[in-house]
Length: 201
Ligand code: SLL
Image (cartoon, rainbow, N blue to C red; front, top):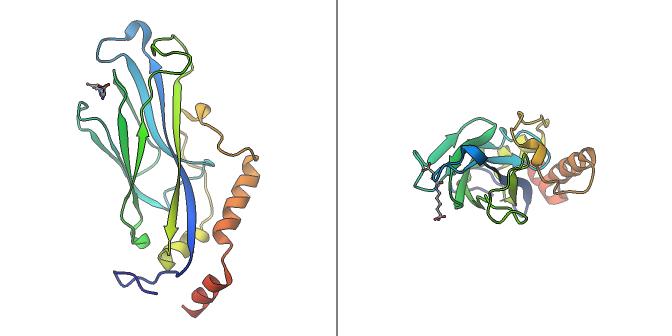
């Protein structure tokens, strides 16, 4: 089948890529001022630590309008930024995909959390940040054929180091290696129908 821009698309097929948007926030303690009481880091990551450059052309973080230049664009990983502020707000994150995906950007939402459950004032002096992570699954429904083939054949590489990695949530109980293997099998595990479409291409 052919998409609106003439691209070949795989019919009756989809694949899923999990992603995580997260924040890790620290109360500034003695350094806290009225408008800069917390320091926080916002990031987009894969679930298993794999690099996502082969999928993403750009990540745009849309901060609250009270910040200078609230639209922050990243064309390379690590997709993260650190700011100081005083309040919680809803962050919009736009994921732009590589051109060969022929997909519109996807918008994800994440709430910046400064106040922990065991720290409702958000003013506990702790080395441990208040971490909040939103798990999402990107579903590529009837993906562009070239994009799918490139992604399925892609050799995973580790993402560049991220500053808050030690606080990341494990979204899967399985050990990392099994998780990686399972994910790759799922993406590469084509149905007979898709196999036929690719062969006919
Ligand atoms: C609230 N709805 O009222 C939220 C808005 C906005 C937080 C929170 C800005 C810091 C800066 C900042 O922290 N804004 O001026 O750089 O709680």
